[in-house]
Length: 288
Image (cartoon, rainbow, N blue to C red):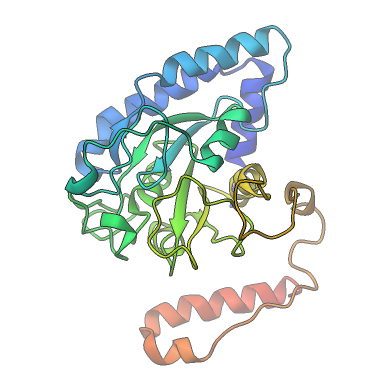
């Protein structure tokens, strides 16, 4: 994977790209492409104003946070103040959030700009991206095919380059499915690592909020931002914060132990298994 997330952050910090211009480009791409893709249910009308605030802070030399000026998509089962948390259902199509989910607070505290609410399978109960009451999401990496779900809008958003990063949720594959279908990076964090306060859950004993990104660095950066315990939630790991970025340099996967289940081969198309087996061999060649 590339390093486009970090390169864009560096450009914003150096003044080569303003937060406003980055967010404006994202909104223009969404306006141009999303009628076909249907990755978004609603856009944030205050996104440019929030980006302007980041640019003012940069000009004054103030701390702006690790996500400064990045355009962020948020799955529509997470509360974002002033935007609708519909869960892609007509049942909640008029529900406007009055508060930010804890993960959204953390994203905003680090300078991330919420651009809009991503489409999804209704109430996160689906794995294809076809069950949204607002229409099925298309796969930009393979037009005319499903993007995977239930975080379908997030996977499609990143695959189409509509935003820099997205927040998804995963109960039984809902981040990992769209990541694999759309050819992007998605992580379901260890249960209890990321606070779920503000999430309209499918299965609270399994749900986790996690990153969808174009590259490993972006996923690591967003997970660093949202992870860590909060006093408002009881079922969490006793972890104050995590650090992943510093571990991405060095020996790569050398010395890592990677588990592979042979049971999956019994259920999987041989062409897909060929790709998986090739990846396993590459990891072995790299020292895992």
